Image 1 (cartoon, rainbow, N blue to C red):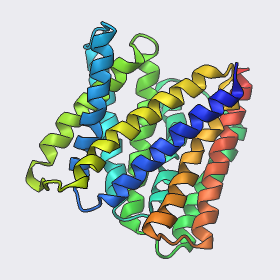
Image 2 (cartoon, rainbow, N blue to C red; image 1 turned 90 degrees about the horizontal axis):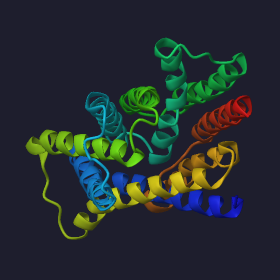
Image 3 (cartoon, helix red, strand yellow; image 1 turned 135 degrees about the horizontal axis):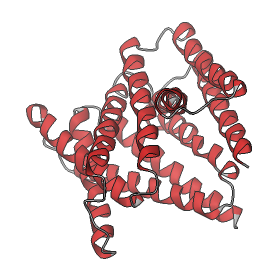
Length: 282
């Protein structure tokens, strides 16, 4: 076990995701559907090459649930991209991380799992951050807030679908289905609002998939390097911090005291829940 190597991998991962989020914010004049298309098609190229090179069956074993994972995932991703047009990018990313709370609720309903009282306390802390964001930050856009909360709900559903898939499918096969469904959905839905990229915009749009791919790969490497996920899992929330800083430095976004307090409570509540859950498993 090499904790320093795991930290390096997680740093690369969260920076990659933060760069991807910033590109999305920069390309605000493109429709969310077109951004979904480019985000997905470039990652799809990586996953297809990996599967073909390693002679892994592309279609997988359970096609219906794999397609379902893709549909739920692309819905969440599209709503997230839509929300970035109305919210500061750091706020959007932190609110999207509410997904584990909705995942816990769905796990109770569909998987008959239980949630400890202490976890509900941490979830309440995170939701109090949302209340502070909406109740005290008067500049927060209500439509954008609705979009990102629905995105988080669908992201929570992804957890449930992945639990159903379990280890019956190769991880890259699951991602490949997600990217294939997203490419088709994004391409089809963007037909009526397609904007031809100009110059550097081509590189930025294709860079979405590159950063997304490496973000996912290095996060996986980080978790594989350590013996206990509790050692590294809380660090994935660095994505929010890096994205927030890029929002300030690149886009001159302004965060009020209340918005920073709300974001901090969301991250703290989710980090504490992650650590508590891992202690229960150990």
